[in-house]
Amino acid sequence: MTTTAIQAAASLWWREITRFRRQRSVIIGSLVQPLIFWVLIGWGFNASFRPSGMPRGVSYVQYFYPGVIMLVLLFTAIFSTIQTVEDRQEGFLQGVLVAPISRATVVFGQALGGTTLALIQGLIFLALAPAAGIWLSAGAIGAAAAIMVVTAFALTSIGLIIAWRIESTRGFHLIMNSILVPIWFLSGAFFPAGGAPAWLGWIMRINPLTYQMAALRRALYLGHPNITGPIPRFALTIPVSIVFAIAMFALAARVASRSTVA
Amino acid sequence: MRSQAVATEDTDLRAPISAAAPAIEVEHLSFSYRDRRALDDLSFTIRGGALFGFLGPNGGGKTTLFRVLSTLAPPQNGRARLFGYDLAGSTLEVRRRLGVVFQHPSIDEKLTVAENLAHHGHLYGLTGAKLRERIAVVLDQLGLEERRGELAQTLSGGLKRRVELAKALLHEPQMLLLDEPGTGLDPAARRDFHNVLTQLREIRQVTIVMTTHYMEEAERCDTIGILHQGRIVASGPPAELKARVGGDVIVIHTPVPDVLIRELAQRLQLEATVVDGTVRIERPCGHELIREVVEMFRDRIDSVTFGKPTLEDVFIHLTGHRFVTESPASAQ
Image 1 (cartoon, rainbow over the protein chains, first blue to last red):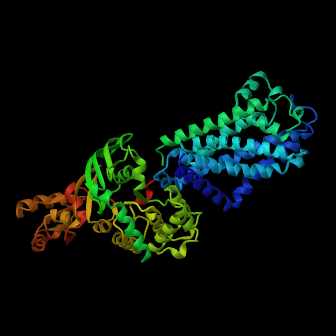
Image 2: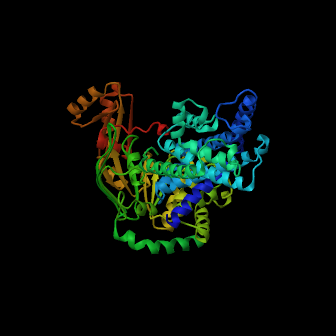
């Protein structure tokens, strides 16, 4: 990347953060929904629901907690990439498209913006860990943040793949919800793969988000590997997560380069 | 004064390029959407420093031509060059030299005027002191200094359009490309916008190319190209084009246009045409004819209008179609 490209991407990133800061309702909205999920589902199921395969000594509230963080990242990614659809509808994108920068640069800026917003939201949620009875070490917070960055970058890139191809925000919502929510559901966020029927277990094993989910779970319990139960190790989850994120970004850049919708 | 000095200096730096090649050269350019041919084998040249307007009704191909020239849509057939740089092959070089003003706003409503400009500058590689200086210059040129800290969403339509222009000028383009600049502005704001454009041309030599369906906007251009069904049916200075229409234009509103045409031909040896239910006669010294025609067909005529040819008359003269301008707002 040239200096101009880095600067252009940084500017697109900055613009997204600035917009975000000026839309308070959005900040609150994308936190409240996962929070409600966590409180209602986590505590609601806590007494009665124990999916098989869940490690011993872990309450359902605790088990579900990393899953909710993942949901925060997912919702923020959906929200931030919807901006791309709106930018096209409102006309902002046309000005960016005639600037002397490549589409990959534009997508990189957009992905960085979405990633940052997701990271901020994720970190806010991380502060609630004690409510789940999870006491995070500094190392755990650092590791979790790093994994959130990689995961959010991948999710935002997926959002951008769709956003660059679609014209209406309504269609975008539909597609995102019907793709990302099932992927999240089958990532081990809700129940462990170990206890699921074999066919579902296999789907979960080929689901890329499973590895990011496992990485996040291990990061939160850094130093206490037996609490997380039988999930993939860092040695597998980290490379898979990084490769997946890069692949999704490359695909988004490619889709954007070919898009003539604007 | 400061802004003028800066502008002149930069113009000098860029002068050799614009002198070497025409601003735009287009050869055999065609563009089709799925089932519709929007541009049909267009070839034209626009000289550097021109104020050129593409005039045509909606659907004539203006928007598509704008999209191709602004590098939003790659040319499908034929080639187009801007200051010698190929639109398809050297897109980034073209983009650096081009300032684009879109019909629909491209500013971010949630950012202030200055933030919008700063962001735009970053996309064009401007930073630091140079960027601050350029922002100050364009804000001054467009009379926007007092608005610099205001959110774009609080500005009136006319002011927003000025911010668009400030944005397009920020990176000192050699050419400004404007899509329907008058659309969505009230007549006063439109006049104001064009006065600003005229002043800009005086301050710095910049080639201006615009699309329009407003006659008065086209009148302000020094050369116009009339687009109809994806082709340029005529081009030249507005006065020259109007001279092509034979003298004066008489339009007769009548319930029986076909009868009138026949009788005009038989009894007065006059050649007339029917356009959209009205009878048109183009003829030098038309005023002498009116009395005669009205007396002869008194009971068949609702009204008669007489005038010097307008660009609309030129369009009708060339295409045989009325110039339809309704609903520009419905464009995507």
